[in-house]
Length: 180
Image 1 (cartoon, rainbow, N blue to C red):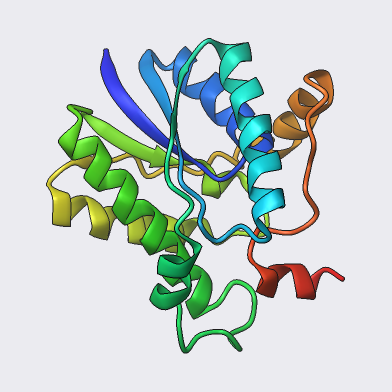
Image 2 (cartoon, rainbow, N blue to C red; image 1 turned 60 degrees about the horizontal axis):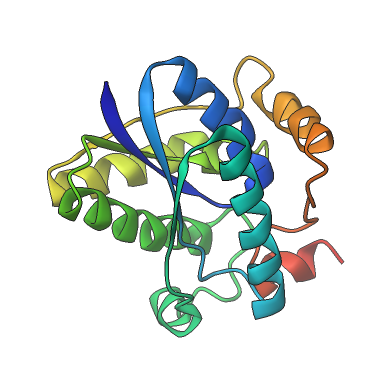
């Protein structure tokens, strides 16, 4: 059984990912690193929902520091990019760099991300970023599209069953403005 570190953007998206990974015989640990989420109260709310999901599936939860300033520095100059553009790619990279580093330093065999469950995210870009990051840390990345086989719909249904809060924007203030 491979030990997999799953970067999770939020509890609702993680539901179907955890369910599928556990049925694929992975030992799953959820890694919550999302310094893009603003404001801090929203970040904390999503973190609590993620903990509920981890308890439901009986998987371990790793809580990372909220490094919004570091994230803002990493995406600096891309503030006016459209949602889904270069800023989002940099955001994926920032979060997956931290995930891969943690996975490598803590004895994981492989890492993955829940980001590909969203119909609003480009799975090809996410997997390209993940593969690139995996090479830098010499740890395997699981290129997955969790939205396949009605993954997103399943995540919605599981979220309802678990009575989870589902946010209406990706996380950063740039995506929030798009959805107002």
